[in-house]
Image (tube, rainbow over all chains, first blue to last red; front, top):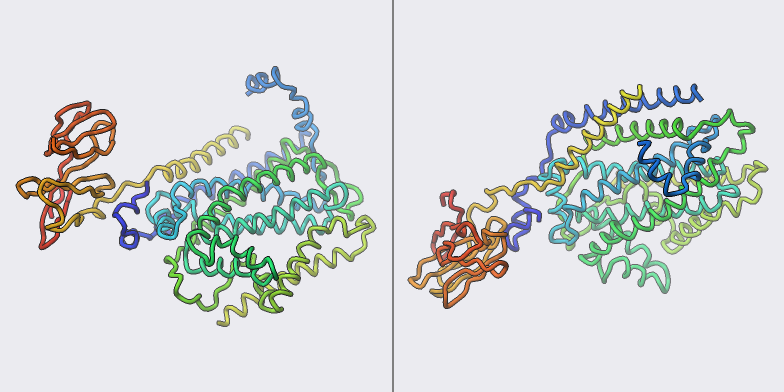
Length: 57
Length: 345
Length: 138
């Protein structure tokens, strides 16, 4: 189970020691930006493919 | 793939499905753009279900652990910030898309016979989506969550005779506390998903049976686009683009997390609900409470019954269109007023 | 075009599945959060008695030996992880799940447990008894 339940009866104490800082903006962007670009490229290709499929109807 | 299809073909009558795939089409005209919003709402609902299930692996629904578990997700769990932020922004996107879908159906008079039941289901689904948002809001157990929920569950108290009872049922007791949190969690993760999935399934099934409605102003459609594969590819393109925007929001503006609430402290100044409830919030502030609850309830009933009240939609009389514009204008005005007046505090 | 789309969809799927799988794998428990735990006070335990407590996210037991000394052991059976019970007057740890037995120092007396119970370091500061893990220095 989750580690925050570690110390008996001291949730407040555990919560204080827990880091609630999330990855930095740069780190978050480094992960998400390639995926966002990939999605936009996919979007473009899907639109092109749909027009190609419509023309061949 | 062919072998898998043959396996089922040899055992079940797939002609209905085959027929549907070959013949389902979507009308092409200048308003066809609005047809994408229904599918987009369905896509966003799936995103919410998946991210919600993932969050449920770590979330703990009791006041001692709730806030800590969300902080654990944000700070310790790998990609916890991402899953939670997608869930947070996904909820806002879903509500916006459902509203656009509903208003586009209204102004195109898509509720005309034979689609009356689809309209009713749609309005009920909007109510369910807003209830999802209300129940989910308490779960992080922050100051904002707690007091926003307190306002929400105390509002029915103005209703005579049954108001107190309704409030107690929502709270699970005399005040917002551990029982409320458990109740909201059960509603948010079990009851609402079951009901919503059932109604959405019927709503989508009816859209297959009846096809897409063509607005009255369009005398002749420019043709029909095959759903498979053309329109579905365009649907997928819209979903990809929307997911890209959702990811951007989640990355650049990750979900906020305040500290745990201290229920004995007073409500913070300038507290207000999320944007989609602001018009109700402002209505309650502007007119006396019981009248406001009455107005909102009656408004909801009238909105639900529009297909049966708009007797002759094909005659193109503008009354209901004006009524719809009035509803949009009122909602927007009340939302802006609420923002401005609470910002002044 | 089809191959590019299929390739793109495959890369997208992998890019999405990776964080989901990573999310589901629970993060490791940081040891520094449990460096030193105050378990009991000096006169809380009589000689030849024991007290259970949680340490390193597992069940542990503090024993006061007949001579008055203290000892702390993991109470997690090294066979399949059941919590062992301290039995008197035999002064052994017995595992109800599969019958393993350990002596008061944690050594295996009877299998199927393959390894002894982990020993922890006990220290006394003032009126308090503290337990730390073997590789930590108090």
